[in-house]
Image (tube, rainbow, N blue to C red; front, side):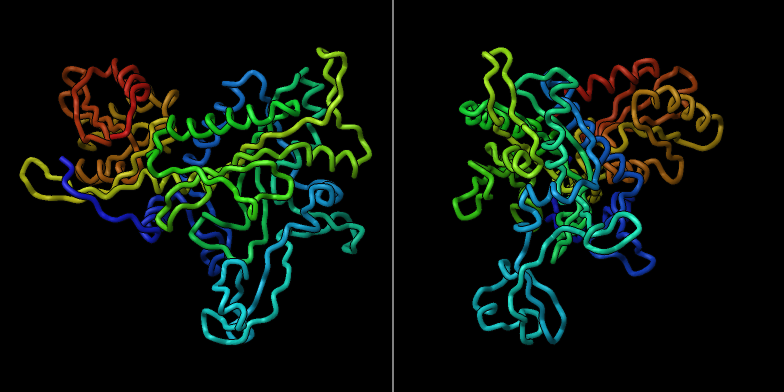
Length: 452
């Protein structure tokens, strides 16, 4: 029986992520690399499960969306056409005394006007523009002729390939192109753990539509993306829509909405749905000299530049959201009325890093070997874990903390009658079932899952 809960803080999330192998600081033994993080055994499983769920939602459940994996290194003219070379900047100031660096648009404007450092009170430099793209060189020379960029977003790879994808797959408008990939931004300030980093992954889908139908498709994709989070067990009262006002609307956008999640540090952007009009394809037509018009063969070969409805979500930011949303500390009363706290991650079973853990009650008397047999029967369908270290109660707690929705306990009765104990993470309920029914019982539990 759940009696009470503790407040969730980012410090607790960071501690859990390191303790259980979700996320580590990059190059930690050398003091760490700012803005970069490594994803451990549980972290990569969770990240892969989220990306697979998104990919299935976009490509498997939609006949008119195809996939793409574009190169990270693209022709420099791509970023001139997109406006990134000229406009992808943040206002930067430095403290002359303590050397701290700040984004001017996120500072107290009174202190900025007086050039007072918010950290030490020292004098600030003048505000200057700072381009967020990482630069490197390709080839044998390192002069301007070999300059190239690490992509700051994945969308442009879709735009320059839109005709290749449409023609090779015989796609007709409306159609979409989905991509999951890494992007890089030389952020002035990286903070809030993995929320804002220099290296991250995006899940983007660009949907190409006929001008005049864009408002309809914009509303359609808003509904679809909201439903994705509900489907995967997110507490919907923690989500909200934010429409971009005139002052924050990007130069290419006709309309833009963000799905925001209430993280421990407050409501922050999780995913954007944008009406990008024909800006991107028009610009690439101008800069490349290639005709990127769509030819509608079903409508007297009508020609037009498609409008684009974009859905853009951060994969690594989604991972943080799912951990924050799943995290709970519960005060539990056991049968002896002794209060006990447990940390539990209430992941939906579809995205949990481990689906089922198999736990032999004892190492001896053949129980460990029997448990291994059962695990081998389950591993082809479910991500499994095997744990025989410590008391069974402590092992349950370890699995709760990892977010494992189901535990199978193998005991002496299992040897006698072929039954096992199935434990449910959220309710801590335990039922006795035949070994032969484990797979079907777990399948049904996943199908019927609703977060308590």
